[in-house]
Image (spheres, rainbow, N blue to C red):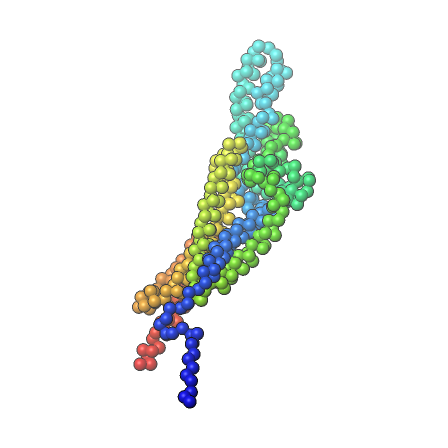
Length: 396
């Protein structure tokens, strides 16, 4: 009896056969996680910056302190303090009273009527000049810093649900500082210059000067209280989502999942920068109409929002660099032959860009480091590929 033949069906794909199609749910899950990772990255940068300003008084003071040296802020603050001082001093009435005490004749009255406006103009000019010099002085910068430190301590108490601090937060979200101590500095300078009428300025004279406008601040204190915790958790969530996007991607599509993360990060960072600029302009418009000039409002809001915009631009730049690196890693056949033919030129250009970004002003540390690392990587990769391609030729 002839032995029976057995046939085995191999599960291994035949040479030249198309690879099995990956499950749809894996592709969708990888894409969703990649986009989510990019959004969480941008959110973590924003929350981290905002949380440091809300919770850290030193960081807040370091941000708003240098603004006092801005000419627009100095001009605006000088105008408001001069108006507050002159409103307390009626120089014309003081001159009239002084001359009437000497002689109440018609000639004295006519003389006082002619002299009082001139004395008032000269005195007001002296006050304006004194205030301008005081605002530009180092002593005034210290007063500005101290006032902002106290204002931020009030904000911290409000965030921590301290009843003593909540009452100091304006319902419209204005963060203000008192000019009482600043007017006291101007008063002492006027008295030192012989303006005895300045003694009439009360010690508690002063108004609130709006430093920053945050609509909804008074109603969002409970959310701000958890901002520090959220800022600490978001980076880990972003890393977990990115890892999940790569791990759930089908075989052969890992680089593509990285491209999804990088492209989404660049798009999310760019959108965040645009939204931030719109928010900045809205803040300028909301503050300008009441107390601040447009230039001063732009300087104050820029002090708070420009560092965040720079951090978001860094995210955009690094994401674009990641897109280029990942694309190059997945399409070596498109650029490798040309790059090897011009290896030294490409390496020289990469070295030049590395040196340039180290000395180019206006770039953040993250952008500088990211570009430098990519350029160094280009030099190393081209050197390795060049030596690998020359080895078979040498052997032959």
